[in-house]
Image (tube, rainbow, N blue to C red; front, side, top):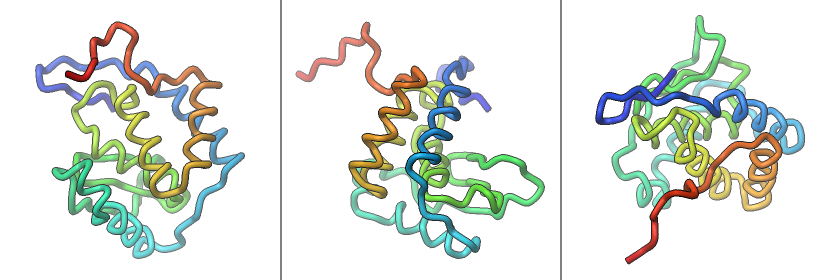
Length: 157
């Protein structure tokens, strides 16, 4: 699913398959906590989104609805405040992935640099620095971009 930026231009999600491959490598080498019930899953989402750290960085993202993903084969963000998580996808890493979509909804490509940078920040805060460093290694191995583009004039004034 492509995100539509404010100007109405559909961004090509060119990193999607590389992001998924990198995350598969990450999950194999760094398995994350699994949640057995939808209630445990919702509690984790609430823990993330009500934390002071999260509110500071994404004050406009709150009250994310979580459904059990019935009739879905994939975990997905259905909007800026709604995620669907089939039973197989209820792990810390996948949930943080979907929350990162909510945080970057309509900002660049669905799995673009901003999304990946957000995901790394989430993993670092909620899973630890070692996990975030391992995710960065997996991103680099699969050529996933998560930093500012080289042509960006992003100097602080």
